[in-house]
Amino acid sequence: MTAASADKLAVEVWRGGATGRFQTFHVARSANQTVLDVVTNIQREQDATLAYRFACRVGMCGSCAMTVNGRPRWTCRTRVAAALASATALRLEPLRNFTVVRDLAVDMRAFFDKWQAAKGHFEPAAQPPDDFAIVPPTSSQRQAADAGIECIGCGICHSACDVVTWNPDYLGPAALNRAWTLVNDVRDQGNAARMDAVSAGSGCHLCHTHMNCTEFCPKGLAPTYAIAGLKRAMVARALGRAP
Amino acid sequence: MTAALFIAQRLSAAVLAFAVAVHLATIIYAARAGMTAADVLARTHGNKAFLILYLVFVVAVAVHAPIGLRNVLREWTAWRGHSLNVALAAFALLLLALGLRAAVAVFVA
Image (cartoon, chains in turn green, red):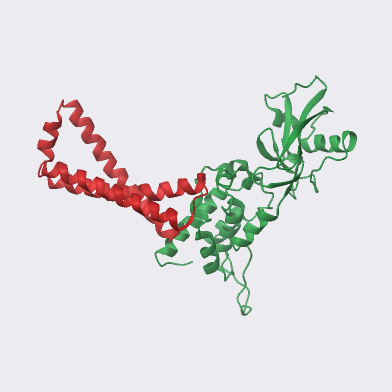
């Protein structure tokens, strides 16, 4: 990597699509500067053709996720100083395991298609229930759902997962985490189809329990445990027990 | 099918954990006691406990290894479908045949 001067940060930015090259920019350092600040500076001050994506800038939307010095991160919530660690330059790449649209922007369609393939949507009964479902906050199912419900679909875990890299058909930690929250939703009526989906050839059993998803999730969720729950449910179902 | 393979691999792993431990302990004991091959065969000859242990060991290997190899091949190569399953079923039968032959051989030796 190209070393930075004392007040300038060297930033190597991926340019292109599936094939391309790194282009080096130099950006002025500032206090508490985030990686997203750096990318925005480059796009507004140096090269308006740089493609990247962001929206909220405060860690709510997840759209600014990129690979920063080899690690998937939300760039809005990553300070340059923390991302650099002992390195002297930033290297910014699009998220791994996604099709690159251009530069730092990736296509999320295949990612969300997997959520649909895992039946990651609420399935109501054919007829509305007679009354509101009572879900005690202390029930084990509610707590299992709570553990994974805050996922915002940023794709960090999907990018961190080696199994997705090896087998692009694998549903991945985000879709399986969502499926597990629904398996534990007592109101949902779609568990038979959902368990069929997550037990099929590209399902939860492919997880190697590397825990990369859990390590990198910016929300502090643990998709690994959600997937382990699905594995247990898959075995229970094979042995004739619900769901 | 997938769930059945998943369960079979984990159950066979549990059996292997026990069988491998006994196998290694036996090897260490025989080596430290300075036993020759003839000494070992003299003890395994007609020993039904050893025969049963190694028959179970071989069956567990024949279940466990092909399922794991199938997973590895599906991750690292583009090989999928019926031909992969047939090839690994053949591999399972090969392991079973060779293993049973060896287990019976030390029993009758």
